Length: 212
Ligand SMILES: *Cc1c(COP(=O)(O)O)cnc(C)c1O
Image 1: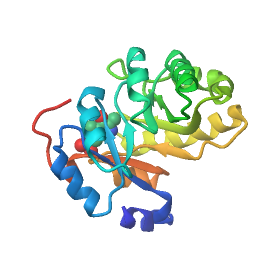
Image 2 (image 1 turned 90 degrees about the vertical axis):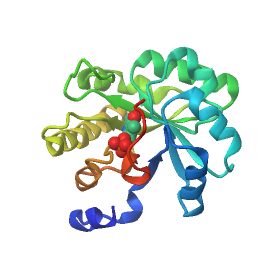
Image 3 (image 1 turned 180 degrees about the vertical axis):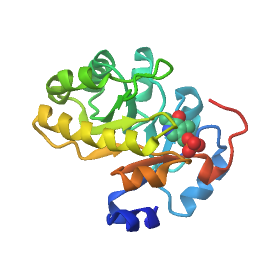
């Protein structure tokens, strides 16, 4: 990560690592925590709940998976940051429940840059059209955009994400400080293209025994 920052002339402190610990047993998370890692990402509420309950309180848990609206109430108390906010309806549901629970989660709006049917996320146009309303939601903090682009030409997609963030800021009328992009296979390119938060699993913990 530091090397990629060097190549891009970026301050390494401006890029954070979410250690993606889905399928990873608690001992190994604890080990990574002992080595100084504080931010961990999980993608399933049921798998994460016992980990959040048992592991140290200073861990910052990020929910990176697809979030169903009926799971929002369960997820919010455990996760300070949600990466996969993929529709206006979900954002509104999170805002409403956060208000009831007196929480203020940080959100990343997921964008489906390439219009891939297999992936969720706002279409870029829908995102821009909804931006004003999204940043007006009172009980959430809108951090920025999150993308999982196609594997081919990934650098171009990351660059597009950066441009879209600029446009979204303009529509929102406030800065969106963060861009969540980059995984094990492409985090260096993502950093070179402006990522502020990389979500890395297998490059840290090894290949997952099963997929989620
Ligand atoms: C699993 C997952 C990751 C991490 O993937 P790796 O390739 O293991 O680094 C990142 N982001 C999301 C949304 C994921 O589901």
